Image (cartoon, rainbow, N blue to C red):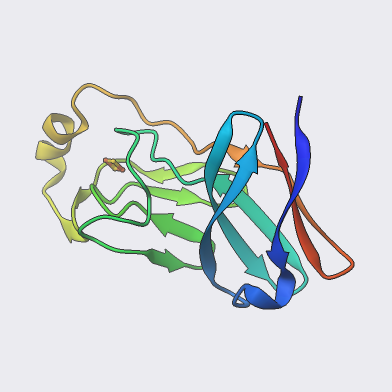
Length: 131
Ligand code: FES
């Protein structure tokens, strides 16, 4: 059953930015990405569905633009509010690769979205529903 946990004060999250945080869940610490737009927030699990790596710690670093995070490893891109996959395994460390070679890098894995986490702001606090 999901529990409501605080990810911190809204002021601690850059407006228009994406912030990695760790919160306590029922099954231990959980790595989460929180995107803030004004007074609203979205959250996803910080784990790429391609190979399970961190979306933000890797050779490409944290790349976030217009609500879309790009995986720090093989450039898959995801909407952080819907979790929707926008592009699948487009390269390595921020550099593009030709379309014909993407299938090899995908290692047989089909495009998938991110696991979203219900998130709200209440009394200036960012609250997440964590399993
Ligand atoms: S681990 Fe994210 S695209 Fe490969």
